[in-house]
Amino acid sequence: MSITKKTLQDIGEFGLIAKIRNWMATSRPEVVRSIGDDVAVIDMGQKALLLTTDILIEDIHFERSWTDPYRLGRKSLAVNISDIAAMGGTPKYFLISIGLPKRLPLSFTSLFYRGLKDEARRFQVDLIGGDTSLSPKIIINICLIGEGKKGNILFRNGAKVGDDLYASGTLGDAALGLKILQDKGLRKKPKGLVNKHLSPTPRVELGQALAKKHIASAMIDISDGLLNDTNHILEESKVGAQLWEDRIPLSTLYRRWAQTYSKAPYQIALSGGEDYELLFTASPQKRAKVSSLARSLNIPLTRVGEILPEKEGVHLIRKGGKEVKLPRLGFDHFR
Image 1 (spheres, rainbow, N blue to C red):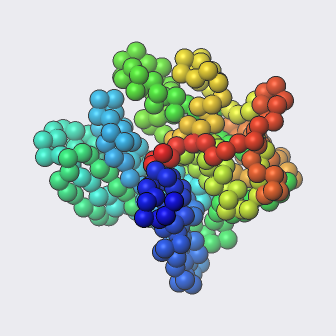
Image 2: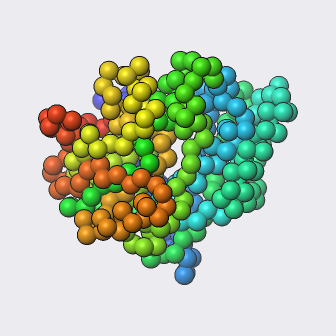
């Protein structure tokens, strides 16, 4: 198929990103990391400047029928803060560009900014600018600026063969919460799962500890799903991996509700996105430090796999012991 006949659906979101990375490559020496990681990293001497951006579009990322404006404001900033957390950095400032329908109630906008302000206050982040525009749908784009110590910043490309693969918290709750919202709306719902989708918690303290204590070798936040984000680490690190299905951390609510929406109980946890937990690799020699950190922060850190040579690809060991070679599974905007 020629490039003139290809569509974005043909190549997918990550295929498009790969092409943009080739089209727009930079050679500036101060750019430590550009496209291909959770944030862009720029050398500023003793420290590094961290920059990230994320977009939320009405009826693509959220629907007004089941998203209240206050939590939408908080989430809009939280998903960007999670990217900084995945580098072990500190969020500092943000800009917001927002497109709004002219008949949108002022009360909706007021509550949105109240949520934005509360999330900013929680993580000591300041709004320093932005833009507003008329739009037929709500469009929210935030650019977040952070900083980190150059020697502590974690990238996706540091995973080594033999490393353990860990996930924080529990997985699949947010994706299952979204399915429940789409099915039932805000009526008759398991609040814990719905809240995981509407109100994610960036793991800033955990990311900073993993970086400062030099525990993790590579890290990413789980926004596209466990399998997709594992693949991001593997592609950048030029390695393979093995995942153990029965070690994927699942909440009690997830176990109770997953069977209603999937015949395979682990599938949503494997391929669903927006958990905003941290996925990281670490040497087996760091297991005691990982356990100690989990206890001190009261955050579950579960060993879900191990890093293999690149030629091994990615495979999953099912609960019964069967080994399955995995394709890329997870959310892709264009597919």
